[in-house]
Image 1 (cartoon, rainbow, N blue to C red):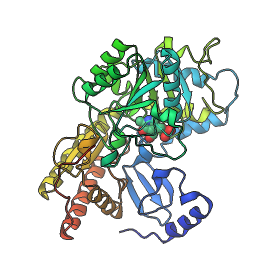
Image 2 (image 1 turned 90 degrees about the horizontal axis):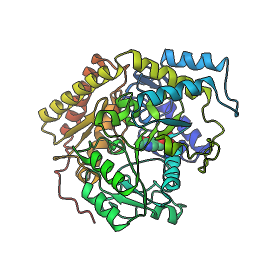
Image 3 (image 1 turned 180 degrees about the horizontal axis):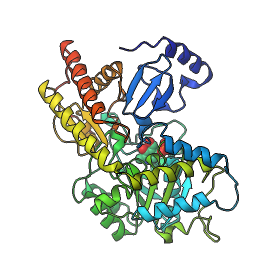
Length: 445
Ligand SMILES: Cc1ncc(COP(=O)(O)O)c(C=O)c1O
């Protein structure tokens, strides 16, 4: 069980100087901890508590924290280079080549600092390319913080599919130009396109919606998006900021065999260092005004900074030369099988979902095909279970329907320990008389 006196005192200080004390809204969870050390699969808070980390800062850490080769590569780069703000750098060229080599849909690429910037540019260039304004996104998918996409992620039951904007201050015209469809429902997408003939510029989708844990695309769904986009002159954008390098060097698109027009990448591309990317068909990418004559504005003071490019090069080279994906997929399989056994043994209704290195236990009966299905998950139990895991030194973010990530630094012994902790956590809750509520029909308007 953890002590948190130092965290509590420091958090009070954090709150004095920053609103809420955190620098990203969804970093505010109970217990409120202050962290100061990370290595491999582990993180430590200021009270010295050690945690096996599956949160992985929302996913970038595919090799593990403070990876010696990646950090060394960044350090070496920084003794020699940083940022010029003019022309190109050798690292940008090398990295662009690697991304183009690996990701099937990418013929040309541009680097940004964050995934939100990449999706912003993806939508803008899709609008430029098609001369249309509306876009389609899916309930449950998150694509960053800008107005076009900041709606209908984790909605309350009565707001599913409705006008669910996530922030004050959003431009109504921008948010309302985004139409919301149901994931895994190609008919819904076809009907939406038919209702707005010649108006849709882009369909943007997480090929696996990991912002709601793990909802896998059903056979044929991504293909249907591809076919509908082709048929109607719509730009298909796969937002692979999470799935990208985590599920394979070629992204989930390579695994699915479906090639979008534009792809956005981030997170695992650089094992925790800040860099993201937008890439796609040459014909569309050439519109950016990095290309003389291009009509779609693209800029950023820190784009292509040596920190991100060096980290990405090191991370990709390790993934090229070692069996990173085979190993984290193997551990993922073991984890999911083990968790299913733990839940079954305790007679807890659970659906252990995941893909590759990602896993999540929804506390519900039935399938997870879209966000509406996940309304059956018992959110209170989900969070209480994870808080019990955190108390026992296994950090799974105690926030409803968030996913867990395995890195190359995790071991079989870590999986064994995690399963033991899961069993203890569940048994403690059961002893306290806390069980998931039976799944009920959820009214969605
Ligand atoms: C699928 C997806 N796209 C885009 C983003 C935005 O990326 P960033 O937080 O780097 O701006 C995220 C962030 O979690 C994401 O999960």
